[in-house]
Image (cartoon, rainbow, N blue to C red; front, side, top):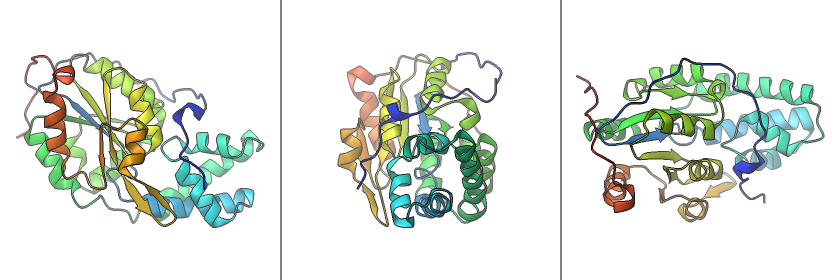
Length: 262
């Protein structure tokens, strides 16, 4: 079985859009950045099934093998996964396969997926505890926004950065620029997420462990790749954040309170 890939296999790619520059500002507690697929949304099973069928049709990879290949490289953009898994394929073939995957991901996975059960109460609790929250996802920004709106969760997030805004490392570097004096935490579910957090100074990785058919990432796996904490549920995340920010090396400076939601 493949081991989960390192983020350093990620292919370089240009940022798809040039958003307006957001000025740095102070926030009260710190920033919690959530990955979307497999972290907020319980969709790894659905998406990996779509990916396996797409890879079988495009490259002849047996479905079970393709599913493991996809799960072992999840966390990076699908185009980067294809570049690593099928380096001999033409750019045109990879681009066509990626378009098919993204279309089917929307119609066959996102149409059915729901958030993990603890997420609505968890986000409300983090907001009550005065944490600022944001999204970093390899999905298209507009689609991520639509899904969060559909599930009633978009309200809790200050910003959503997606595939058009760069890689996960670029997202995290941008969030650090926007909130230069605050502790920043990335909550993700893959080796890519953990190592991306570790590559940006001032970002702490936290993990959601996972177990789907034919694939398991344990808390120990995520800890090995840099997670300061990991579990199969995020229910204890508020307590973990409280503990980590009380440690002297992570204590944030005094900051102005952010605008409170009604």
